[in-house]
Image 1 (tube, rainbow, N blue to C red):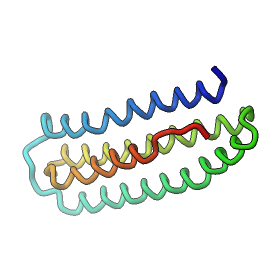
Image 2: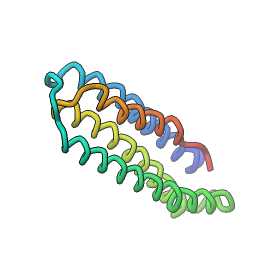
Image 3: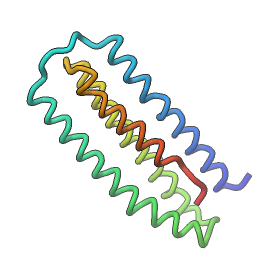
Image 4: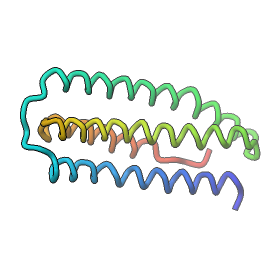
Length: 135
C-alpha cells in the first residue's frame, strides 16, 4: 500500500468516527440534557459561532485542500502535499464536528431539540459531503 493509499484510509477512519459521533451527540443531548427552557441571546451567540466555524470550514476546504489535491494530482509522491491534504481533511472534519458540539451545548444550556437539531443536521450533512476521496 502506498503512502497516499494509507493516508486516504486513515482519513476515512477518522471521518467515519466523527460521522458516527454526531448522532451520538444528539442522543446524549436528549437523554442527559436539562428540561428545555429559554436561552435567548445565548442562542444567537452560538449561531454566530457556528456561522464563523462554517466560514473557517470553507476557507480550509478551498485554500488548503484544493491546493494539496492539485499538487498530488501531478506528483502523488509529494510528502509535503500529502501532509497538507491529510491535515486539511482532518481540520474540516473537526470543524464540522464543532457545529454538532455547539448543538449539544445549546441542548445542555436549556435549548430544545428544535433549536439544537439544525446544528446536528448541518454537521452530519457536511460530513457526508466531505467524504475523503483519493486525490
